Structures are given as C-alpha cells and as structure tokens.
Length: 342
Image 1 (cartoon, rainbow, N blue to C red):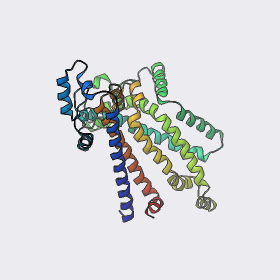
Image 2 (cartoon, rainbow, N blue to C red):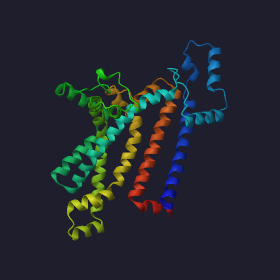
Image 3 (tube, rainbow, N blue to C red):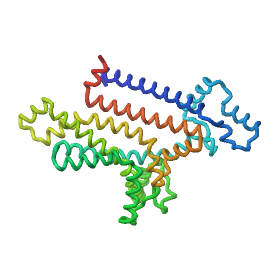
Image 4 (cartoon, rainbow, N blue to C red):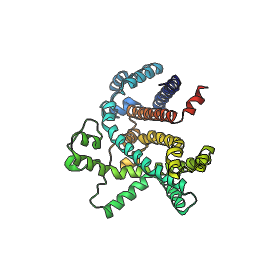
C-alpha cells in the first residue's frame, strides 16, 4: 500500500467517523425531543410514581443531558443499546437475531441489480438509439418510478396464479423451521451444514423479495451505465483505439467498462446503505421478519432504545458501504486519490 493510498484511506476513515458521531448526536437529541416518557412507555399507564422514578433512575434519564449522551455513546460503541421498552429484552440481541434476514435480502438484491443492470446498461449504450435501446429505457424508467411494494404484490399475485408451488411468504418452508445456523444467512448456513435442500429452499423464498426490491436499482444502474458508456465513447483515447482497429468488444469490456464503473459502483454503495433501513415494505409484504420491518414497528410503538439502535446501525452500514466504495473507486481510478492529495 502506497503512502498516497494510505493517506487517502485515513482521510476517508476520519471523515466517516465524524459522520457517525454527528449521527449519534442527532439520534440522541431527537429521542429526547420526541413527546412521551420512555419510563412511562416501558411500564404502561398503570405504573405508580415510585415505579416511574425508579426506572428513570435506572435508565439514567435524570442525569444531565451531556452525561446521558456520553453514556449512550459509550454503550453504542460496546454494542449495548439498553433494553427494549416494549419487550424488555436487550436491543442488541433483538437486532442480532433480525439483522441477518435483512442482510441476506439486501445482498441478494445487490447481486440481482448488478447482474441485470450493468449488462443491460452496456447493451443499451452499444445499441443506442435503436429499438432495443428504446425498450430498455422504458423498462428502466418503469423500474425507477414504480414503488417496490407494487412489484412485490404483482409478483405474489403472479406466483399465486401461475406458480402455485412457489413460496411467497417467509424465509423457509415449514419442514425446515427447526434449522438454525451460525451466521443467520440461511443460504450460507445450508451450504455450511451440507444441506443443499435447505439452501435451495431458502433461495426459492428469497427470489421474489429480492427481485421486487431490486427493480428500482436495476433501472438506476442501467440508466447511469448507459450514460457513462456513451460519454466515455467520445473520449480521444477510445476513438484512437477504434481507429487502430481494436474490436468493439475489446474496447467495451476492457477499457470502457472500467472507466464507466465508477458511477454504478457509487449507486451500489448508496443502494446497499439505504436498503438496510428501507426494505421494510417488501419485508412486510413477504412476511420476511427482518431488521427493517422491526425498525418500523419500533417507531410505531415509540420504543426509543430500539429506534436509536436501528437508526445508528443503519448509519453504520451507510458509512461502511460508502467507505468500501470510495476505496474501490480509488483503486480503479488513481486520479481521484491524486486530486484529493493536492
């Protein structure tokens, strides 16, 4: 690792650490501004004043706000977000049990987005202004504009009518309900346990939710890849390659694709971060039981400890995803690192 790249990486890590600190402060302030006493929410309307005072002292709600924030930040760094005000269980345990389901859904969504959006964008650029390009632009526009829950419902209806044996609810079939793995990712745990039947069943359950969630991202990646490919096709060095008789496939996949990959990669990073928190609609339609839908339920129930944990964990994924994308883009295009170093 060169010193220039190490400096680039250090700047990114420090910057994103600052973002997380500001995010934690905003979450804490909003949680204290929201109407409603957390102790009253936890104990219910019939609790006595003595019980409320005892719980408030236990939760540290009577401490000065700066001290409360320091305690909250220290607990968050240790992975301790306190207990849920509704269930009474540690919030970290609840998140650990729900997060793998959403991660598996989001990772499958990203794979579908990349596997479909990138090649279609390349083809649209290669055959631009043709009927094929026009059809792909219409498809991408429909994917971007239509909400994911509508795709989810349409897929469910289509499966109920045409694919009567295809699962449309839950993460796995009832006969495998007792199975549990180390990672919580059922497709991975099935492979680790040597149970191909469980992996295939999990993939069948995963297909429709991931496809519904990926439609918007496919449209975005397709449009951005097409635009980037067309823009780079006009560059002098690309025209020079063509003038020397380099085959079109070589120019497209060896040179243009690398130059045009930066914008789709940026979209992938943003999509990964946003899907962690925004997949709740598809999770609810398919009864997925993941982290995102649990976050929405925590908001509806005013479970402040759970809400703060969900937002902060989502923010961490946003920061980590963008950090990895920045590193990858810096490796692809060293000019960006050199530009920042000046």
